[in-house]
Length: 307
Image (cartoon, rainbow, N blue to C red; front, side, top):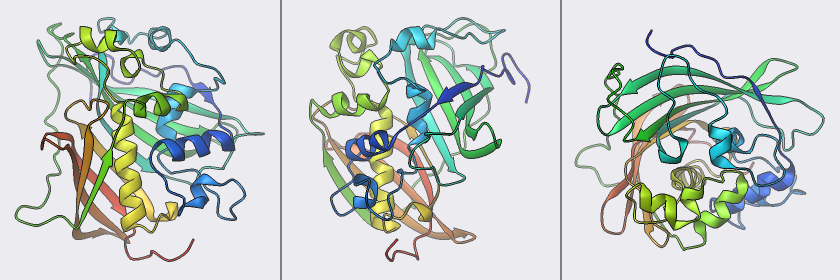
């Protein structure tokens, strides 16, 4: 596919993590004391939760908090307008799990390599920038995870760019009750904990950015809801075993406010890609508004035993 900005490669960025980072991430997305392999570094099966790579694009190698807006302004895409990073929200993310992550990057060099897949002008609502990011062992040139991201720049459209292709949808099965229902009561502190993983967007900590964007104040990271839902699916359908996880995606349909209750509904489709069953899911709030749509995961549902 061709178009403005397509194929542009951002400079590679080194990333790193320690066991402590893996423990914090697992705690922040809802892992429980029954899953010590995600929460206790001396567990014989200690592992990094498989969606952790999504945070490394924000964290990089920083041991300290960073200026989120300055980091977003560091690189511009040629051939398209310079978008305002203070008015960007997640559109959709797909993660493909290629290899288990080591529990720490110490002694090795990892980097994220990102390229532009498309920049789409959606008119008055805004612009979608779609990218592909690979987490790579730089010395061995081995990929551990691939993340396809759609970022939506609110109110930054009408610049004459392409509208983009029609999206592929994965709706829940019609007329079938969900096979799994989970609830999560968020609090005012939920985004304040999650941001410590390295995603320091002020939108999730201070009311001013959200008020300017029309959200009425602080909203919870879309990736918090995204990761929480993935944890629930893996815990209840894949025996909490990261080896039973292959692929995961969802679209960010509506913002979540601190204090909202999240409700996950998931359906086993009975359709398999090899040993991986396709799971469809959505997440809504207690008022019935869908906040994560187009949910799809590939999970090895028939191998739940001990790790």
